[in-house]
Image (cartoon, rainbow, N blue to C red; front, side, top):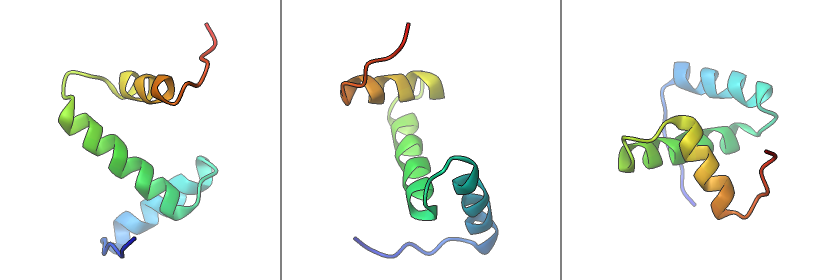
Length: 64
């Protein structure tokens, strides 16, 4: 685990988003980093497709 320095304005956006998404500030930042990494590795996939694949990989049963 390490420390990541980010711009104060971005930190404020992470803080606000974390409240809406019921995540800690760190969990929200980690989520955005993971999705960004997956989006760069899979540029043809939409956000929803990336999330669906991650849920399926975690064996989360999705409602039809």
